Image (tube, rainbow, N blue to C red):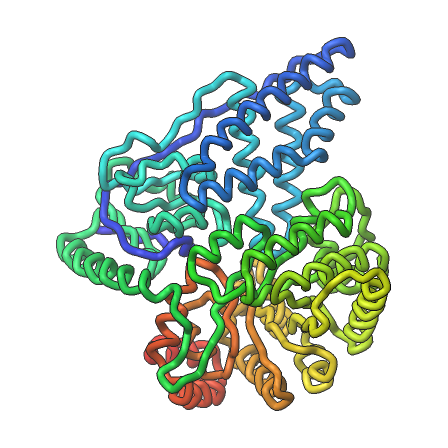
Length: 567
């Protein structure tokens, strides 16, 4: 009899194969004491291990776009002065040996990243975990296990897979993978999406509950792994795989097309990014622009607040890469849940409602002006727009706009170019910005709905709390009414509304959001073609009628059932 296990969908698709259990070599960290005379030699060992791994990463430059991008991202982490300085400090000041210093530093970095509320940034903890494994292997002279020589038709099962594991995977042999840990936005998931390999993550103890060699079906459309399937189930899924291949061929032709509904409504399908590497992947996947560039990484990867010039160069490069396509850059959204090693935040009972984002920026104006100057200067090179997050008061938006005007005047005096018609919008994610949307739109050029926080605040539910996870749903009628209100307010003012939260990437919601009047979808670059396909084959007018029906619902379950039937 078959057994079914549920997981989070990291990369969509269906696969049939045999399970392969992948376990990592256990590494024993030396606890040997060192003396003051040994510190230079110990740090030299770590430095050599880091340099050796960076050389390995350089070999991935000619690999796939995703692998190359991740190699660059890992090289940046390894080259971060804070990373190496922390290791050196532990060796020099605490007399920790090289292995202990590296291990403790990695654990600290993973802990910091794991506490972050933002899904994308939290998943970067796996990147630190990965470089920790790889540098430790170099340090101890261990050759790590790889997934390079497997039988064809293997479904890899593991506690977790690092980007290094997936980049070394035999693409001809591996048809899918499932892991105990991991999230939808991890680099491992991104590689799975790029390689078009079905994958489930966050499956709990799947690596302990199954055996190697067992026949299995990986159905990531439903988010399940079926172990020891019946002949009937195998036949059903073989037909599904055939249909899936046909759909993928169609989507390849669609990704670079404009998303225009059957009744002529043009929609922008953009991507959320955190760095230049993400942008390259988004462009490869046919994005119409970027609806959210998270700038937190520029701050978190430095040992001090990044300078105006360093930020300008990044923003300029991204702007030039997109040409005329829009690039919406969110100003620093950091606070109690996203710390900085070089800045001490106040201790707060509830950091999600505390000293963060625009509140921090307006309090630290010189730091904020460095970012704004970099953004305004970069606007001269393309279609850059500025987005202010976590706004609750009109005064906050006015003050931010006043700072931007001051910067424009300064640049005029110096003869430095910028876009005179630079758009400034807000991320709508708080209850006050929803309720006061008709007032905010007077001072905002556009709205972008951040559904992750909007849903959390509207429903008064901590989305990270497993005990009340059932309360958190973007399909809750209150959330949908809030979205509709924001869109209607912007349209009445002759402006537009996009969405950059996870809901925008949910292809089950595409028709509904089209019907609600959304002008721009911005999410995972892996979903761009599928979202475009849905829009191209749908009528905005007909979906608006369906949306009206949904808005009349009283319960989340009613909405979900209607959406399932409609799709």
